[in-house]
Length: 368
Image (cartoon, rainbow, N blue to C red):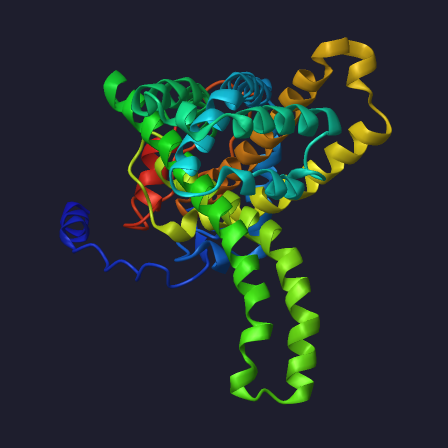
């Protein structure tokens, strides 16, 4: 039947279905692929989430993620004190350094006791110095401090490339510049957060005694008097969490060596990482306080070991969020979940590009 075959081959291809029409897609074999082509991670069906979680757990079980988190913890420990020096140098230009130490209480329950004491002592030493000594050669000393602190940023960027399964394509100078700029942005963000932690409680304390001219009803005045101290008490932790969430979101979107996607695809991992970081920090601090005695085991190095372990837990949580986002991108592109015990598994998408926003980028950067 050559005529029939020619007629069939000449027929135009059927029009493709609209993108994001459905949260499921049926492959050529007739099996459903949950979550492929969804327009938002928050529209992912439960079947897609199960595949994402399966892939995330599988990836976190590999030694690569643990080694990457350990490398981040090592460089973060080396960068800690240069970062503190840079932070106080910038903060001291515009604000009173004596307001820094009271804000350390927000870290009291998040850090192991020995680590909290070590950091507090270092900050106290820097604050006690005269303002003139902090600003002599400020530009040079600040650049040196930021360059030293950027070692941890470079390790995080490399670890994010690993989590998103992409290779570093940026030039050496571009990579160094991004790491330096990210470190500077983090220090400036920390300065702003610290300033808000000082200024907003003072502003809220100012309100009750200066609102009498508004003739507030007694019941509202009582509620205001009772509620403001609670708000002031919760404000510092809330600002700190907001800073962590924003920093992690920026890292997920701009850290890996690949084109940046829409913000919404970075949010699930950021929300999970921020929440888990808070829980694991409290848990690790409580564990060290009640069970593990690093001082008895490591002697004078106990505080440093405690800080490094806290950084390791924090880095692991950040990479967990990155793996979650990477799994979501694989899902919407129709890629099969990765299996870490196979070498170069075939993960070919069932259709070409299904999303101008994320899916095509996920195919290019996640396929092996």
